[in-house]
Structure formats: C-alpha cells, structure tokens
Image 1 (cartoon, rainbow, N blue to C red):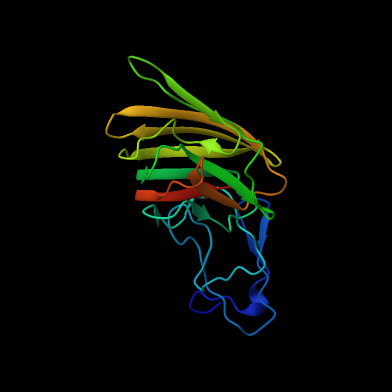
Image 2 (image 1 turned 60 degrees about the vertical axis):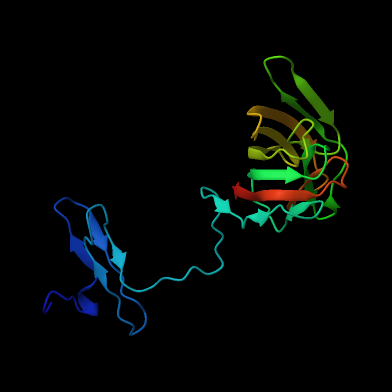
Length: 218
C-alpha cells in the first residue's frame, strides 16, 4: 500500500478487531472507484461518482404536487395521467367560484373515461339557525348549494379503500359567510384510477374565480 491506496492485488480482506472480516472486490475494469470511509457522521460508505438508476421504480412516501389550474372559465377542470400506484389524492380549492347555484362535485376517471354514476355522496353545511344538506350519485359533492357570488377554499381527500374502491372526505369553507361544507362519499371504479375532474352537478355552470390543484401520494 502506497499513499494510503491499496493495490488491486491487495484488496481482498481487511481484518477487524473481532473474528469477522470485510471483503472488498475490485471492479473488473480499469475504471477507478473512490470510496471514503467514513464520509460524514452517520455515513459509512460514499461513492464520489454520480449514480444513475436504470429500470428502477421508486414510488410511495413522497407527495407529488400537480400544477395549479386557474378555475376562471369552462365547465370542468381535469387532472389526468395520475400514476397507477397512487393511493390518495388531495383536491385543493382556493377562492373557487362558479356562475350559478349548482353544487361543485368531483368525478373520478379511468382508462374508459370519467364515471358519472354510481357515487354515494353527501355534503352538509352546519349553521347556527339551520343545517343544509345535499346528496348526489353523479360525483363526490364538495359544496351544498353554492351562491354565484360566493367563493370556496379547502381540501377534499380521496383515498383508495381497496382495489378500485375510493372513499372521499372533505372540508371546504364558504368564505364570505364563514360556513363549513363537510362532505363524504364512496365510489367503485371499473378500472384503475387515472384522472380526476372538478365540475358542477348540472355540468353547465362555469368556473369564474380561484385556482384548483391536486396532490397525490402512493
């Protein structure tokens, strides 16, 4: 060993203080490798070269934020190309408003398109004087009966219960009136979830204010 570097013929085993040994196998090429022991506190071995992962799938444990969409026009806002490994989707509303009084809802889609039937969904608006509620089978309700001049902010969580069964729970604030919209529901898709649509129950009211975004995780 010269200058602290072991020649290839010497890199076979290093004795420890105990009975165990550490075996180091040199590369089969003439490419140099640099290993630092230790590199920093808590790190045992590092490789100074940049590493590339090939044919590897890393999923789960991280939150992926999509690109926020301005909800200022159109009858629906779509988020597509959701990965098949996703287990939970958060739909987020910030100052969202529509042109009419039809309730805002979320619809799920798969390879066959968006599914517009078969939902079990309800939303309630508690208030001091009275309680308003609504239900539908065409999507996950986000609001009860909105006002055209009102805006809504909050989140709805859509989670995979099993296979293609998805459940929803949400809390969205009716901003000016300071009234909470509480929702819940369930839906069984015919295939793997790949997309999410935000629209209204009547499908004709248009969005005219705010932004909508989704975040998903595995």
